[in-house]
Amino acid sequence: MTGPIAYPGMSAPSIGPLERVNAALSDADASNIGQRFEQMLWAEMLTHAGLEKAFSQGGGEAASAFSRYVVEAVAKDIAESHPLGLADAVKFNAGPAPQPRVDKIS
Image (cartoon, rainbow, N blue to C red; front, side, top):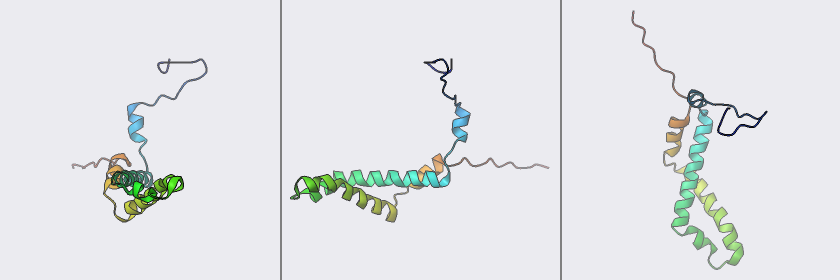
């Protein structure tokens, strides 16, 4: 039995804790995830500050339908031009593990 529920002929690959650690993200993937997280954070902060509501005032249903896209575009621009540093933290924590340094004692 490979898991809590096992069906004949169907088994999920078992990944142990060591394989999860070794399956780290590449630098580009980790940086991209960090930048997207910053973009999402900026979008939520701008929405909470009332930017989405300001864009949809007086425009009816059409303006309210597209105001979220405008806020997300502004958040993407801010995340690219003024990063918060969270992308570096994600890259450091989720990126490839550094190889241990071995000192040779002679």
